[in-house]
Image (cartoon, rainbow, N blue to C red; front, side):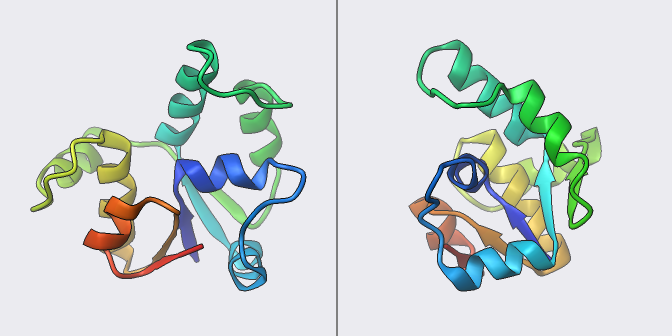
Length: 124
């Protein structure tokens, strides 16, 4: 299992995702997506910072039907664990995703340099 960062979720929606074959295979084996990623995407679309061929709501609905994916609702305990990380990154989604991966000792699919510098199990 891996956890997909929001940038990986956006990337996989592209016609030709820039992810390695190895990473795509790891995702196919099983992946988590945190609910905060859908909120991030919806905000970027609403602000005009992101254009997608599918609405965030439709993306969420479609991904719920993929057996190898688990969409994880973020609860208050997860937020507290994310905030407790000894990390200067102020992006709440990055903190949640990284904390989630740390707790499960799994890789993160991300191109984010800050995540990569803090958490060594990052693939792309």
